[in-house]
Image (cartoon, rainbow, N blue to C red; front, side):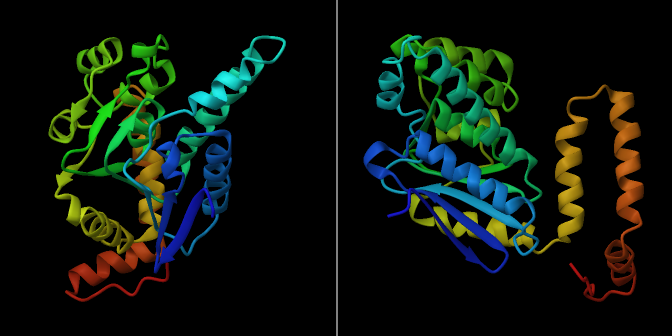
Length: 261
């Protein structure tokens, strides 16, 4: 049984965390499997969308605490292992956003600590009714400092800080209102609703979505003037694509575009 399952449907790659007995914890093995798929997808032009889900009763419960405890047995008390672990986890989280394909988190059950970080790192998220989200490490004496990075870039500061210092869960409706997820759907419609969103985005010009996703995250780190200068250059590059020229012509001529990508 693979710890991370993959199956592709047309231009959509479905990745499923498959360690339900551990609530799909981000163990060393899970992080390695995710990194392998991120690396493989980077240059896969046949895939235009990625959907990330979890097997069993939860999406992801965060880091594997048993493995982290075992890491303490090293002579340095686990310092080197912990540093490496959080660096590997950060590579996965940033790797999701650096993928040319948009990534949708399909969330159910719970998404806690680094599992909530994973949701926040995805470009979009759809959650089943009843799903709960939390960065609750503070409850066991471990402040969720790395999950905080992604969370605080998704929702308002005061709400993020409250979640971090109280360790309390929020429900799916609250997560939607705050902007952590895109929408809440009935549990029996979760896969269908997520697939519909994935297919819709996959139907767009792949080259345009790729350049747009990169620009989305780059400009967010810039000043207003820098962002306009940068995105203006991006639009010039995009306008020069053959398929963009064809897309505009097709719109004006009221026909479907004949795209090559």
